Amino acid sequence: MIKRTSALLLLIGMAFWTCEEEEPLPEDCAGVAGGNNICGCTDITAFNYNSNATYDDGSCQSHIDNGDYYLSFNGSNSHVDLGDMLSQGSYTKAAWVKRTYGYAVGNNIISG
Image 1 (cartoon, rainbow, N blue to C red):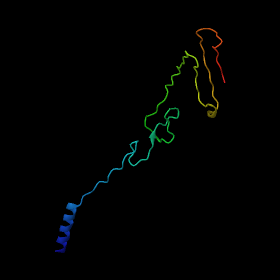
Image 2 (cartoon, rainbow, N blue to C red; image 1 turned 180 degrees about the horizontal axis):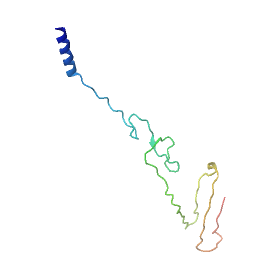
Image 3 (cartoon, one colour; image 1 turned 135 degrees about the horizontal axis):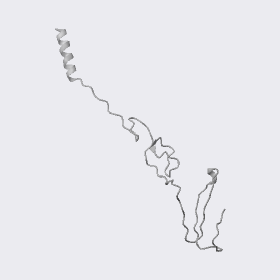
Image 4 (cartoon, helix red, strand yellow; image 1 turned 90 degrees about the vertical axis):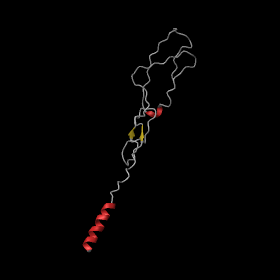
């Protein structure tokens, strides 16, 4: 009788026993379950570089580096501000200048 009761209780227990699936871990921005990646721009030449980013999410905003750039000055007080370049080590500035109206007193390139 005890064997039958034990077997019956075991069958009833197995009928109600289910395997519960664990909740999946949330994915981080890189798609890693349970990960802790920091998504952002990892290109140090981009305007929106994020030094804390551990995963490049494709959001970098960079200039197009094709080598074809020109500036056109057609007014007074035109200038280029290169910012504080002294703290970035050595650098070179070079320019080709085409004057369209010949020489004039106010048509000088001033360096500093």
